[in-house]
Length: 369
Image (spheres, rainbow, N blue to C red):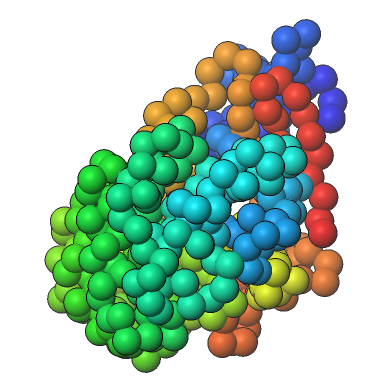
């Protein structure tokens, strides 16, 4: 990295895109917008606030399917990964005390309504593992680490429990004063019943899944229950995953005016080598599906920061505390393809590729795994 580099800044906090010089100083890196000599030059790199992946699985070595946080995070331009329910109240201490501190990437967590978290993948098929009072207590004792309650509400997971896990997750979240992130997928329960329980600030992850019973019409408009949920302030999260993203559904929804609020990967051991790979690959897919670049950046910076109540996350004033440097060009990353969860190929014309992260004045180059 040179002592000064011309960059195009995407600033979601002020809803601006502008050129600036990224300068290295004795105290760290900062942006300088007063550079008339460079006004006609085109920057090689973009710069934005640090990227956030709102849905990951990083309880490495303990929970089913998890990957090391740095593989989902700092090596790929992501400053903060939020683990989505790998830990429940009984297993949270291990994630917070031993696993998260072992990595450079910052970690937060959605706490599974199941006390055991994702020790196995039928965590809410019985009420034996759901303890609302202990979950509320765990959130209160770890409020700086836990951002909300996660519940998986689809047939392969809930079994005969139907809506009960979601109802209990909502109760715990209400008592703790936090939102719910709900995984949607195949019925039962029917999607209308799930959506009717959600309130302002809650998050629907896997919003563009292609399974039977998804909440979208063929013209890209939401079904009535989803429209009502959106009108109440419920947030749409991508949560790509191994089985939960469909190109056509996503393209149709965006064309109809229903872009997601947040872009996340649901990265885990079964998809980190494809089709998900990393957050920038998922961002590239959303760009190819019709989201403008500035909105893609909003969806991995200011939008997840607002859900996490991290109000200062996107500031680019003074010495940069957290920023991601990246490229956008027509050169496909080597060995990378762009398929949805059903194997349908997408052909992006532009590719988002992280270059480096700047954290607390320090510059760290990204690497492709």
